[in-house]
Length: 189
Image 1 (spheres, rainbow, N blue to C red):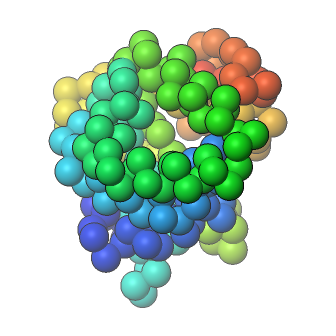
Image 2: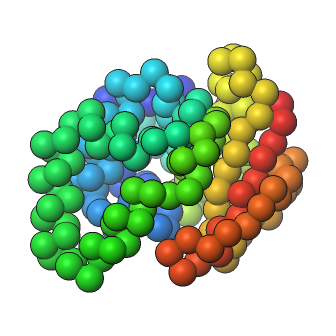
């Protein structure tokens, strides 16, 4: 069953995000991800849906109606809590300081527009249509909010590129970010 993220799902979603997705956010740990998803529930422009069976979250999807300045908006909602977590991380990983500040200036979040931020399905439950259902739920939510297209950014090395093409997305552009090739997809709904 697909439903909106509740406070009871946050720990499972954070765990799934950390285990199944690559990139900088999972590196920051479950404490950061818990706070991220908790904060997202307070932001009207963001939404997260979970795919749940028998009390277990098997997948989730997050989206935002306007990605412009998203990182800053989230961090400023709870600056002390995020600051503490990030400071701990940067003290224990000083070589990541430059990466952290480049993440804050992620080019996609400067242009704005609706974006599917994350979609993940637990490894043991892939190839069952869960990802497709979550993607379609995202499209439905954007349409409900009078948005007729949205973007998705994904590392070029990931099989998710094939998934987005299969879902009807078009590759709009590619760019280098943090030493990796990223693809930007878009779909009109």
